[in-house]
Image (tube, rainbow, N blue to C red):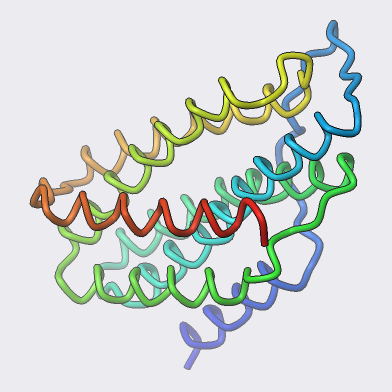
Length: 205
């Protein structure tokens, strides 16, 4: 019952509570951000996509921690979730600053990611870790693309995205060190296709 309550609490906090970061939001103190209305809208849409990614990360890690029977791995997933919670708070803060809203479909994104996390966990701990590694690799590539799409003078969003990209690379490496196997190419392609659908829809809704 305790793991179930923990999972339910994590979902409610992710979807309905104001996220709180344990680490200060990355900034470029020497660079002021001044954006036009069009640039704000562009940055807002991109940061909404990034926020959705962090909602999904919370769901994924929570599901994997819930499903594993390995206490050490459960601690790993819980720790990773706490680190990703900073990203959730940073992206939500930036959305507020830009006058943009989170995705209206966040409950759907959360449920989908939670289901995928459960499926990965049921296939075994090494597969579950592999899913983390590949997810983080794909997220890192996605964040790299956002560094080219964000307005050049949106220094505030760029600082957040750059730090997130570094953190995701570290998470992928940690998963590989913990014993992740290599996923089949077809699985990686399916994951990329699902991510494209999510990012396309979240950009607008």
